[in-house]
Image (cartoon, rainbow, N blue to C red; front, side, top):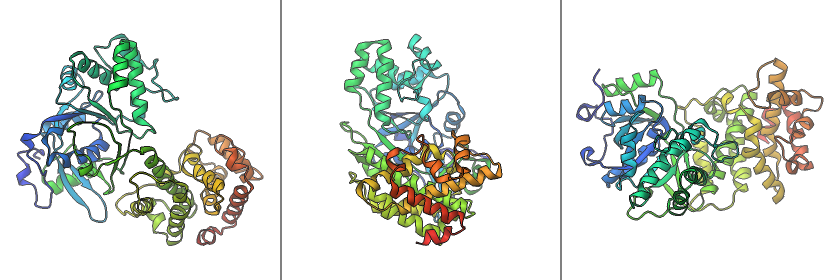
Length: 477
């Protein structure tokens, strides 16, 4: 079958959305590390819109480890399909990538990073790709960082390449590029700046000071569900297009990129493409963590106790869907202060609408993993805020009671609990007084929450209802 390419664009079916810009006019203004599915479905789609009116911001996709994606982009003239899967699906050809650099092409990458036309570098390499320790600080003993400290001219890590590129800019008297981390780490810009400065200081103290003073590392937050591009999906795309596309990606219709405002003269108009520019990325992160993730965990534990399998099934349950809607609007949203540029009630509605997307098969069992690590940030911080403000915690106690009941059911059935504290949680969940045993776990429950009689009583009452088989009555209240 013919491959997707510029030459093949004209022959695509009429329903396929084409790029809105002249592909031959695109210049490279952005270097991106980690061109996986999320980048191609998310940031590149925003940049594709920018290019419709400003051709300076083509993306050079850089992969340091595997050449499969960069090879596919090279073979397809940088083009690929973005399938938006929702109640009203759509298919669009993305033409945001002006170049692709794979493993072994270090000289080309170094030249690009040194080019004054490149004003921005971005990254989606997952948290572990930044070689940080458990404390969020650059791990000087990481094998890649050990190599970069010893051989600065031959970087192994993303951090090494960023610093090497900035060193070349400084040596040439050029302005630095801005560095935008697009991985979901709290305070990601600050963490990346600290890592780059730490490595630079191993090479040249003056370079480290220059990076700290001159380079923009704005914080960001990104969000969109991007299912894997498996063989069935790629075959479906080929059938729809009539050509083969080895780089096709899919995502839900909702997509969010929140970026801290930073200074860049004559930069790209990201806001016009839908990027939210704000002074309060942390506020958006907190809203996502509490509203989206808190509601997700609530759906997972309660939904599993009711026999549901997916988020869509759980939200389609009128009783459970109604409970989570009240929880999110009346309890979780109330824990948030004003956030620059964010309509909190509107965001809650958007999150709940995403949960009702029939095209996304998001398993509750996966969301339920690692509850001991997730619940403190997803629900217990919200609970602490409610207790401090004197608001009710009755609804907030229900998903936690469901989690304890879920753990007990798993333990009694001899089924594995996916959690770093699995053995401890299993023992607590089948103790004589499971609620007391669970709330005593300080690895999960802060004393401020666990020792408050209002909360303890609410969890105990909800747990008793669940164990008595009255979960639906509990949710309806």
